[in-house]
Length: 147
Image (cartoon, rainbow, N blue to C red; front, side, top):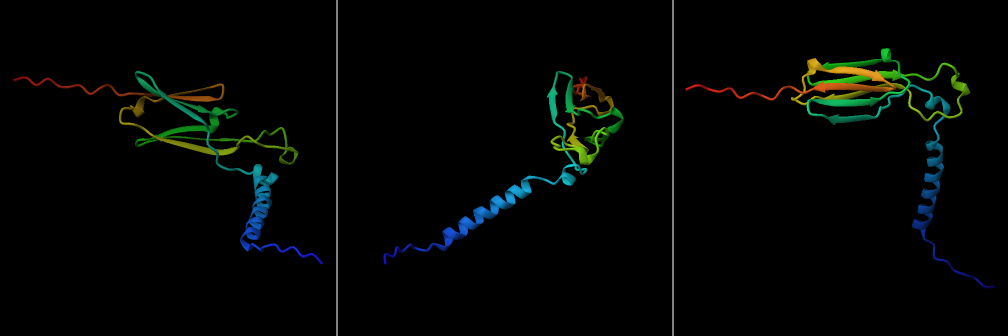
């Protein structure tokens, strides 16, 4: 009778077990249930911010959102954009097979630099893009002192 001896490595067995458990939970946790997908959750719209000579411009990507569902507020030195995107009312939640786009409420806040005049901020909404133009204050003037 021929016997082959193999060295037992409990650490290797434990690592293999951990890898199997990670795969099992990874597959289960990676696929959210339909109810979770269709539930209301916070999301973050994409934003571009750039500067011209006399203003700072914020472009916020908000497709399929009604302008009445948007709010832009300035309090102290913070600009806050809030709103909500809802699922299409043409289909019932149980009719969806896949939902990859984000729905529900959102909020983005930006601290305004001292160079911005909050009283002059203007906004427009076209083709799913909210554009906010933040005018810069004039340069401080040096006062000439007579002698």
